[in-house]
Length: 243
View 1: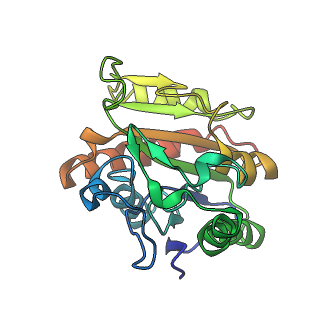
View 2: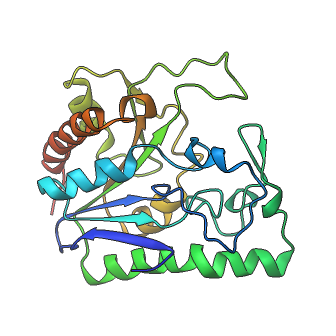
């Protein structure tokens, strides 16, 4: 284990690997973001419900292992290119993050401590136990504070970039669960897909990106229901993977 990542379960060659970039709200004591600590329970700091759903998916055997980001997305956003300004966000949904206004040396130190070890562990895991499929798990807020007029009615979103081999099957499986499914909603995987671009598309591994609406996975009952739904989705989607 590492402060940069946490793993649940054991990766298996030919299995399913879950990756969750934003599963933690942890901020190390020596990292001062300059924010109200109450924001660490907010969507800008963590993908609410993701760690719990990931653990349930591993426990049920629907996925073999889950690699979870070890720190808050406000410390470092691992679902960005390392040279992207948003990797160390100086603002998020209208909230300033003054502690991230670092010079080049401070920025590189933050990336070297958290971003690079996280991605190195994912890369090493895939190299040692190449999965048949990767599930990227995130959650989204029902409404943004900065754009309260923009409705986000989807229960779940399916994201992908160039590799859409599993997207259609995932959408169909989730719609069969009675959910309102967003195809490339609440945003497009063609615009924001850095981790999957690097580790899934970069290695030719089929994948699907899932965005769960946070109010539906904010408690244990919702998390259990979503884990069951995603477990069934994984089984259906796996049928579309050709050796």
